[in-house]
Image 1 (cartoon, one colour):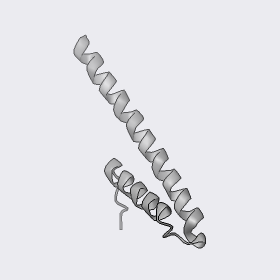
Image 2 (cartoon, helix red, strand yellow):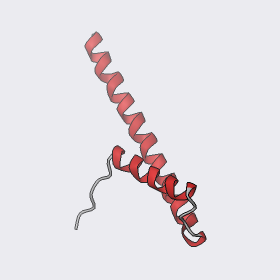
Image 3 (cartoon, helix red, strand yellow):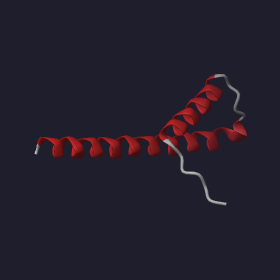
Image 4 (cartoon, helix red, strand yellow):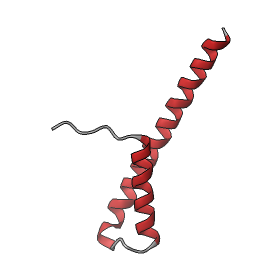
Length: 66
């Protein structure tokens, strides 16, 4: 089965869930590093999505000014 592509919104929601669990001490020590690693991956994904979107918008605006 093909893996569904993660959206920016879904990534942010997952980060928020992990943060909520951390803040409420709902993650046991055995899951802590796994969740922190996943949050790091999601943050990296979100940063890349923002950079890509910014570049696309700059390109579009540049074309409009020509």
